[in-house]
Image (tube, rainbow, N blue to C red; front, side):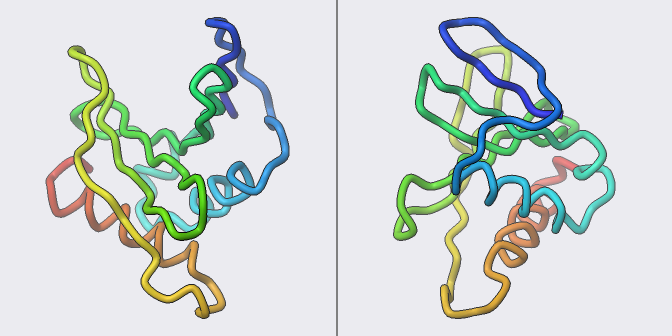
Length: 119
C-alpha cells in the first residue's frame, strides 16, 4: 500500500506514481532484513513537499527514509513524533559500483534502527 499526499489530501493507493525515487523506495522495502519493518512499510509520495519516502513502523512511532534528490545525496532518516518531524540520522551508499547498492541501504537503515532500539 502506498500513500499519496497532494494539496493537503491523503489518498491510499495500491501502487503510486512511477519515478526513480519511487522505484528505489520499493526496492529498499523488499530488501529490509527485519520482518517487523517489512510488515508495516509503506511508500509515501508527498507531492506538496516534493518528497518520496519509505515509511517504517517503529516502537517510537513512524520513521521516514527520505529518498535522495540526486545520487550524490544521502538518505535521510526522519522520526515523525507528536512534536513534528525530526532528523535522527543519514545513510549514504558507500560504493555505487556495487551491483545491489539499495540492498546495502536497506541493511544500513535496519541496522541503524535496531542499534537505537527502535525495532
